[in-house]
Amino acid sequence: MAELFDTLTLPNGAVLPNRIGKGAMEENMCDAGQVPGARLVKLYKAWAEGGTGMILTGNVMVAPNALTGPGGVVLQKGTLDNPDTAARFGRWAEAGKSGGGHLVMQISHPGRQVFAAQGQRPVSASATKVNIAGFEKLFDTAHALTDTEIKEIIARFAETSRLAEQAGFDGVQVHGAHGYLVSQFLSPLTNLRDDDWGGSLENRARLLLEIVRAIRAVVKPSFSVMVKLNSADFQRGGFELDDAKQVVAWLNVEAVDMVEISGGSYESPAMQGRTREKNPSRTLQREMYFIEFAKEIAEVAKMPLMVTGGVTKLATANMAMATGSVDMVGIARALAYQPDLPNQWKMGAVPEIVWPTITWKNKGFAALAVMSMTKAQFKRMANGRAPSLKLNPVIVLIKDRMDLSKITLRYKIWFAAQGYELKK
Picture 1 (cartoon, one colour):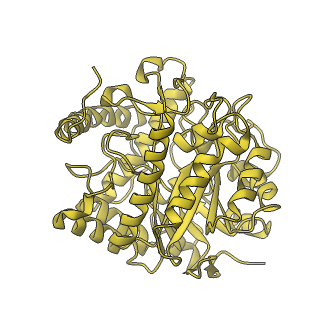
Picture 2 (spheres, rainbow, N blue to C red):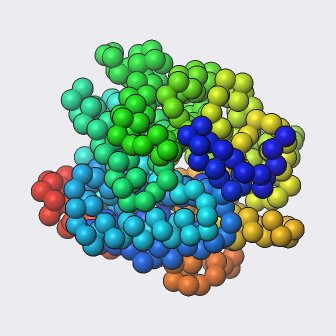
């Protein structure tokens, strides 16, 4: 049975120094022009030196008109033609690999999950809209993508992957979870199409499979290609566990080096633990949200599996490894509060990571506050300060919204300069 600090060899031959992975968390910290800067370099150096075996970046966008947040990094055709920009991506990659771990760029398209205030025109598998009680005005109804537009997006994922390899990253992870575009195609709640991209699960999974194939066609065999997949949407009538198992079975023959298991979306944020039972009967289920789903998926998966969500304790991580279903334990928020947690564990320390619990009645506000509190820790580390448990979530959320307004304006100016028309 593999243990947490054993090495892990991926199908492509890459060797990871241990079984701890930093889960992707959206930083929203790019410099002007949607490029990485000194703050991201400093943040990733802290995580790299903290001892994680693999680092997944926050989602890097494949298109300038499709961002989850106005501070997101964009990597597209022509980006690295500018020597200064190429150097910026190179420094980011160097920082993320400085501790000897595997650095993987998460690449994504948000689809309909873009905020209306950013001025983008949301797209999706079908003309649907994000529906969060009390937040309906934050999102617009999406445009249903045409066949040509879908193929253009597939090409964008491939080009971003090629450029990530050129910049020095060790791999990419296609974000197929959390209600973003790939997940929208997979889910029958958001994919209402009756063409070759919708209807049956095979058709709904076509976008993901063609993205993976397109990426593999333009990168070296040694470059890691990974997928993040929902175990379920946690919404009635949505993407379910049996669907996930079938998609993983299809991915088995697509030279995928790892699948990360997660779940939920903006409408049902299971990735934050918001859909868990109030009194779960087992410690591992309570502290590692998707472990039971991973056990089921492991029955069909031929590639390594990573599970992220809720891990704060060494004992929990060890229990997950002891199931024999998990090849890598993903840790996200805990590393925002203690970036050297893997090193602490390896030295025998067992620090308790306890972040402020946000149990507001409105799930939408609570989800925003959780993200704002996490981003506040990123900003502290990027400025050379230690994370803090003493921040007030209300104040942090308000400040984050104010900062977001400034970044949104900066993004809109840049976006218009690229020749795009802002939505009125």
